[in-house]
Structure formats: structure tokens, C-alpha cells
Length: 218
Length: 245
Image (cartoon, rainbow over all chains, first blue to last red):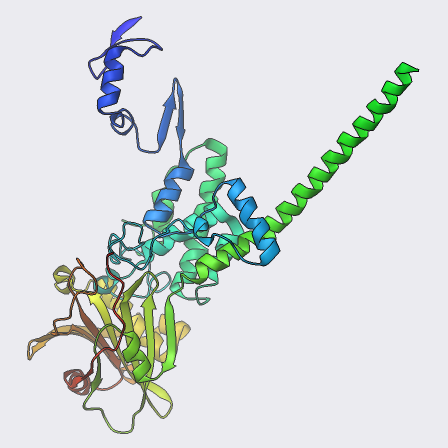
């Protein structure tokens, strides 16, 4: 019944001892971040990997995705206003970023980490990037395009895909990256996560073979 | 008597509940149709409409000067018989300081010279990079594709030959890719960084400079002469980029 936990607290199964309470009060986050991967949650023998949360964070932080849908009551209220007047009363509730997104010093800016934070090296030329050389590829932002495309497709389906494509020229590297790389990956993730609750294995290999500069070889 | 009255009201109540459920269902259906086909697309249009890069073609030099956050330089020397320049401008949504201007010159309707000037983060590590075999292959393809289109370029790229060299002159370091074979598609692509000290585009930004790239069908000597003569620089008239609050 009693045992010593890895943090040094004796614990009684299913009970909160004063030592455990004190430990959690001091560093409550450690409990999650130290022992498990960030997006994994465990309960008894069950384990769930939160693909949705992981993708959302990547799409917002890396991809700069800014659209979001608030709770149902807000949407209903805004929807009725939209029906009545053809305009939204509070458009800002649909933005993930509510501060000025053009402000590079705002942590909400898509380029807070710098425009060149992720580059485009590794993507195949000329299919998926415009830059001819490594030197140039470091100043592109294809990783961002890719993650935004995955997020739009995963969370908003065909509508998100069409709206992403509508901003690009058909046949351009950005357009092809969405259509041939990001959207298929999102569909693959959605299908596999639906079946198994987790991301598919060997995803890195799929990405490397599909959009990688070396076509699958390391 | 009492029982039949109860039956009567009970039936009415039941039908009332059914009617209410049907009404709610219809309302739900109407909302779903409205939400899926009108409301969500409207939200996306509103949000993504604002998130588009600025891409302008065939604009005046003044317009480019007004938009670009860096001085646009024009060549003081050009071979004779050129038409242009056609000016195009591009800047990134969310990062308007990442902008570029392209000057295109034609001879008898055919593009023979493109000068690309871009406001980019200066990164010493990047300048030191030696082109890999894959880079050289990519440059060959790009120069061929520029002249003969995608299909023909794919066919010719493996036969093509290219030479890379670095030329240091007057403080500039030109990285020159000269495709000499096939001779009928001979072309040069060269890149270099400007020496001008530009003010940081926003508070706390890394150093930014002007990155030049020149693509031409002229000889190497003429290409270098054009590059050296890029000294007629027009000061930017751009509004200041939003900075930290």
C-alpha cells in the first residue's frame, strides 16, 4: 500500500499525502513536463497523445495561423449579428492574435522568432521552394507555410485548404507545397489519429520522401 | 371522463413536444447550413484576406520607392538597346520589412537582364557557404528554365556545365555562377551584399542589409560592369515599420 515515489514522497495509492501536495505546490508543472512528453497525458494504464493540441500549437507558433473559432455562444451571437447586418460585431474574437500582427516585437506576431527562424533548407527545388542555393534557402519561410497548411487543413478541412490555396499562384512552390505536402500530411494525421489516438509512425520518413530535397535519402 | 380528458391533453402535449423537436431540428439544420456555407467562409475571408503578401507587377519606380524600406539602386551603365526597367515589388505579410524589388530589362521583347534587390537579414554564416553540387545543379536548372521553360530545362540540365567563382572588387564580394554550356543558353547569375549600413527595421532587430542578385544573358564582363554600376540609389520613401509599443 505504501511506497516511495521517484520524487522522494511516500504515497498511499489514490491518496494525496501532505508531501505530494507540498511537492505539487512547489513545482506543479514538473509533474507533467518532467515525466511525459509535452502532449501526452496518462491516466492509470491509459495513455493519450493529444495530436490536436500539438498541431494547433505548431500551426500558431511556427505557421503563424491566426484564425480561431471561439465558444458556441459567441459564435451564435456573432452569427446572428452577421445574418442581420452582414457584418461581425466583434471580429477580433476570431483572431488568434488580437494585437497588431505586424509588430515584430509582440510575442503574438507570427514573426516574433524572426522571419528566418526556420528557413527552407531541406525542401526540394524547384518543386517546393524558390531559392536555388542553401545560401538563399535560409532566408525563406517554407517551414512556416508548411505548418500553416497542415493546421488549416487539419482544423478547417476543405474550406481551410481552399482559402490557403486562394492566396497563392497555381503551380508556384507555395501552392504545390500546400497541395502535395501539407494537406496530404494533415489528412494522414487526421485519419491515423482518429483510428489510434496518436500520430502515425515514420512520419519523418514520409515528409522527407514527399517534400525533401534529397528525395528520401539522408 | 377524467381519463379521456387526460388522454386528450396527454396527446396534445406529446404532439406539442414532437412539433418542438421538429422545429428545433429545423433550426439546427438551418444553423448548420448557414454556419458551414456562409459564416465560416466569411470569417476566413475576413481573416485571411488581410494576411496576403503584397505582390505588385509593372509599377512605377516612385511606387516601389514608396513601398520598399531600402534604397533601390539603378545601374549607371547598361549595354545598348535595352527596354525597361519593368519594376515589380513584393513584401511579406506580417513582416513588411522583408521586401524586394525586381528590375527587368528586355531586348527585342526577350528578358535579358533581371536585377533583384532584397532587404534581408545579414548572416555571416550564410555568406561563407560554398555551393554544394546540388546547389550548382539547381542554378543550372534555374538559368535554363529562365530561358527555355521547365520541360526543356529538365532535358538540358544534365548536359549543362557551370562554373562558380568568387570575385572580390572594391569591397564587394560577388558570387558568380557562369553557365557556359550549352553555348546558345549561356547565362550568368551573381549575388552579393550591399555595403550600405541600413537602420534596423524595428527595435531590437538583427542587422539587415540589401542582398543583390543579377541574372543575365550578357557576358561575364558585362554582368560585372552592370553590377559595379549599381550606384544610382533612390532613398526610400516608405512609412516607418510598426515597432514595439
